[in-house]
Length: 209
Image (cartoon, rainbow, N blue to C red):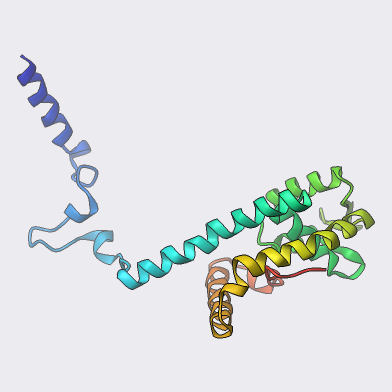
């Protein structure tokens, strides 16, 4: 009896759902009768060994570096890395003021994320917001004196972390290459985002007031 039930379960697992084999096979198994991959699998440009190694190494910059900066800045300055970037961008603007949509572009953030963080910084009296007169729902973010003092105090620690984790580990030619790589990736991303090309580029990681 147990053997019969097991056989029945095996048959159910192997049976394609909705009469299709697309959900019952792995991408590598989806081949034509001639043995050639079909559909999307055939069109996928899989990474070769060198490309995959480069991608995995770059993942450390995208994931581990921001996390390390975040932890260190919160410990030393009571600011997250993103909060610091918001204050830093404002500190470099005329009158320490910038429209929220432009601030979102400069910090590579969505308006919803920026609004949440700005609200938190407002409660700490590091910045304020004010409606821009005229049509539309436009808002300025303005750095307060307390906020300016906070970003100035945090800047040395931020730069020290950037040097320790990245800049001082690379040779001048490697830094030049990293800059070209960053610019190329940024351009590729913006090509897929209509209207982004007219915005101001995001600040560099070493930007300070």
